Amino acid sequence: MPIAFLPHRGVVELSGDDRISFLQGLVSNDVAATAAGKAVWAALLTPQGKWVADFFVVAEGERLLIDCEREQAAALVAKLGRFRLRSKVALRDASAEFAVHAGWSCAAPSGGIAFDDPRLPAAGWRVLAPAPLHAAHGAEAYDLHRLELGLPDGSRDMESEKSVLLEAGFDELHGVSWSKGCYMGQELTARTRYRGLVKRRLVPVAVDGPLPQHGAPVLRGEAEVGEMRSGLGTHGLALLRLAALEDGAELRCGEAVLRPHVPDWMRLPEKAA
Image (cartoon, rainbow, N blue to C red; front, top):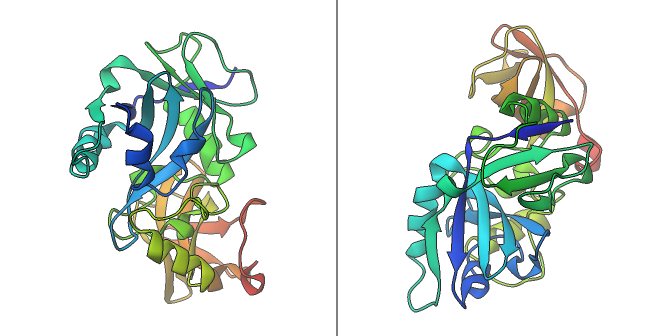
């Protein structure tokens, strides 16, 4: 049964009467769409529209729970807290109270707060449980699953205050609401979409050879066309210029050959499809 315990994930709790309206004005997705068992995937951006953090938000009783990178949980509480002003909202790092799991190709187990991964049906579901589930595999099992699907994993695939959401598939993977109104960084995100300004994409790659280090340059001939991001074994993600996907030319990264694969869910400009 493919269930994985993800110890690198933590949980932030938001409570108070204004919890939804407070978060709604700060993140990329529609927090009002959350409910019990229904989460949204969203990002916190700089005012200039660059990625700071991404996470799942799910409603549970009179609180919102944010499934985020564990190392970012305390900083996320601090960053969000700067915008609290007179809002009736309380934030705290609740990571010690939850064990985060992901599963796919099976039903979600009982005994925790379960929700479907809102990015893709094939991504499966997630469970926030009080302790690690006995049947769970290690995080590497899930890592291979999400790499095969081409799903980004936070700071392993994006750069703080540099990455643009649409490069990492946030549009196709339902990480942005185009109808909810203003949020921090909304102007650049919308302009990037409507003016077709995306020139690079994070895509899955098959790795033939030693797995390259994170950030290693990807070359087509002598030209640098991108860089390696996260990977495991023969699977990885690389941020590549769209032109590098057009003609099937051999891409090299360190001592490895990379073979990009554009997943079915990803929409590219016709000339780069």
